[in-house]
Length: 170
Image 1 (cartoon, rainbow, N blue to C red):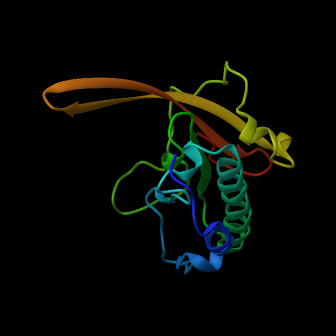
Image 2: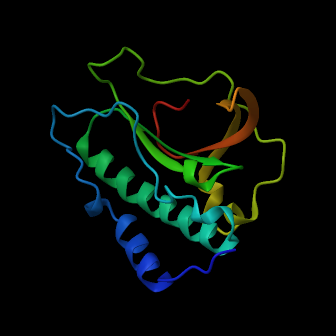
């Protein structure tokens, strides 16, 4: 495994990325979000290191709290959730979805969401106040056609929403 240089700078930048101010979002009355999302661990650094994965998941929860506060003052109906991949930390993201002119898909519903049957991952167990969130999951199948040989992978995606006040759960 290649040595990870610049950890201090990396985590300092992650601290900045978990702040709402790092994402230029428009909360004006005529704005909208069509599955807007951000991946804080886009390169998947958390795949090989549990400490890195925990830091990114905690940063997603922090950003979710800040986004939730801003969306509540915005006054429009919205959906806000985190998706965590069991296989690839680079797929972990936070999403905002509202009524939008692109499609008539608000509120978004995913009929395949179920209660997770497996134990929650260790990196999720460390989140303070986890009981305030609803955690469900769905299976995502990916097909990779590389060198004329298709490979199918099945990933379990955890979907995390706040329990307390969302009008439009999945």
